[in-house]
Amino acid sequence: MARAPSRASPRKGKGSKKRAVLVLAAGVGKRMRSALPKVLHPLHGRPVLSYVLDLARPLGDVFVVTGAQAGRVREILPKGVIPVLQKNQLGTGHAVMAAAPQLKRYRSVLVLSGDSPLIRESTLRMLLEEHKRVGAVSTLLSARLENPSGYGRLVRNGDGSLRGIVEEADAAPDERALQEVNGGTYCFSSAGLLECLPRLRRENKQKEYYLTDAVSWLLKERRTVHVAQTPDWTEVLGVNTRVDLAVAHEVLRRRKVHALMEQGVTLLDPTSAYVAPSVEVGADTVLEPNVFLSGSTRVGRRCRIGTGAHVENCVLADDVSIKPYSVAEGAAVGRGASVGPFARLRPGTSIGANAKVGNFVETKKASLGAGSKANHLAYLGDARIGKKVNIGAGTITCNYDGVRKHETVLGDGVFVGSDAQFVAPVRVGRGAYVAAGSIITEDVPPHALAVARGRQENKAGWVKKRKRKRAKRK
Ligand code: UD1
Ligand code: CA
Image (cartoon, rainbow, N blue to C red; front, side):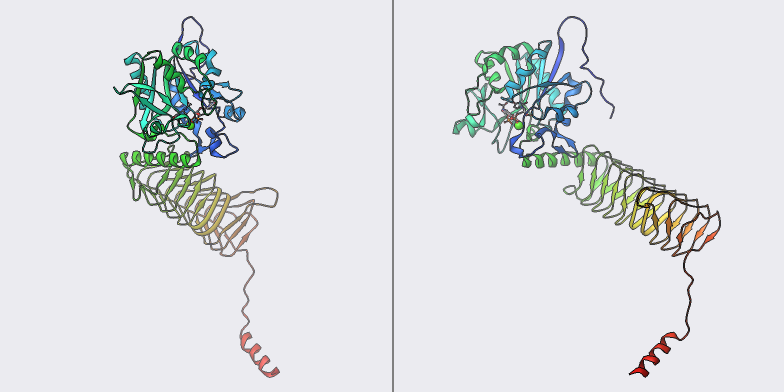
């Protein structure tokens, strides 16, 4: 993905800038019970916070409030995103206070929670539009939850207008029964927000400065506060616990497989296909049940990915077949090629067009030219294999001398019989044959036959003679 141009570089000139996006990410996340800060937990292979940053970056200058293990959080911030340190974590309101000096220069502030990665871009744009249309001082995102526990509840007046936000810890039983929750996503006029901050107090169960109290204060002051509700509860999910993390995985997985089906991909069992959001799959490809596709994987058109296949950071061209229970990582597979069942492609593997890699074949830093075949039981490591090469069953490249790795090079059209071993470094010229059972330690010239094995001797009648000898002894 192309990186959005950095918008956070200091601009010269007078007047306030348009919008700051403030991402709150300083919390420890106690409920995760982890040595890793909550916002760094991986979600389909990327930190939770990275999803929020993806949303934030097109919408303004991005500031991230860091605190718990600030150094580690800073490491994942893309260029142009500005970290702000909150030394002690005294609540979401306190986190905003830490950034207050920076916010003065902006007209509006969009506040996002670093632990809420499931909001859609379209929903944020809707929030910003409504904020502008209504002319609100603050607009916040809400959703109705079947089980609202853990979230701040929106308390409304008899006429439906908002009265305030009550945190779960401070809520009376009737307030806890309310199902409309605060999504933790707000747009504020910068001046309005800065006016609220000095009003926040820690007089609550958690002894924290709540950002939600800023909203309640604005309401008390009869300022315009608007609520933008999303009909999709999954968008407001905060990743506070491991259970929330699992739900977030599932929500993103489901969104992804639905999107793929809309793009023309067939899923034989959409409930069991694990496809990371980052993966691309071409039309008319079929995913069998229980596939796992992750990382930067790109799958072409008309492919078939067999059940139990694990494909990570791979590029598969069109018409590729990955048969069941194959594991491929960091491999490129050419058009029409077939891999598996039970094959293992390790990083640096490149399989040519229409080539075949069969069961129990392992490859590593190996290229197999177009139309070549390694159908059964082989280890091909640090190997450069030409076009139309036949690799017999049981072939092994002996690439490691205990210290260094060495290369095996097989020219185009080479035929390797079963159970051959190549003690690398070694080269076999184009069109050469290697006899079954050979241990090749020296280069083979083109079109030669290499036989490198002990000669067979048949001792006629040996078994019968032996039996007779034994019978006499008894
Ligand atoms: C918060 C809201 C709650 C809302 C929910 C939505 C408050 C008081 N409550 O609750 O109404 O329903 O989010 O997900 O705002 N953080 C800091 N510094 C701090 C404390 C928190 O940066 O001192 C960050 C956290 O890292 C996190 C975000 O702010 O990313 C939200 O904090 P969290 O403790 O998860 O708030 P909730 O209890 O979920
Ligand atoms: Ca939270």
